[in-house]
Image (cartoon, rainbow, N blue to C red; front, side, top):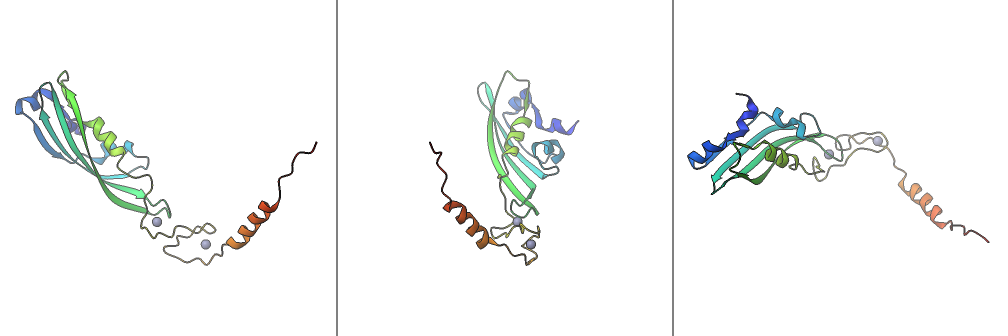
Length: 163
Ligand SMILES: [Zn+2]
Ligand SMILES: [Zn+2]
């Protein structure tokens, strides 16, 4: 049995048993292409609960994933766990309930667009690139000077086209 078949269930079997609850930990490799960063998915744990309705099967699931991400301020890698739940209805015209798609969709939305290694992350020095959480590079950013230059620009009035 191939590992991806773990997530495909026979409709008639679920129905005969009157439902099914399973906890699975499929190999992260099965869903690695969901994430932009290669190897981002470290661990995946699924709780799947199928219940049988009149002419359909309801799947209520929970996805827990451990993700390897990059701090959006300093670029350091960090590992965080996320979880989300989903539900999906499968009509009884199906021979198999394939849970892969909904797991894939749910996993793709787990991580926030921006993560920080800590709220107080100091980021990187824009001049030398040093991680300011670890070193103080001593670079001097001439912010007042730049500000003055901007002010000077503002003072220049746009020339009106003469007639
Ligand atoms: Zn950081
Ligand atoms: Zn620096």
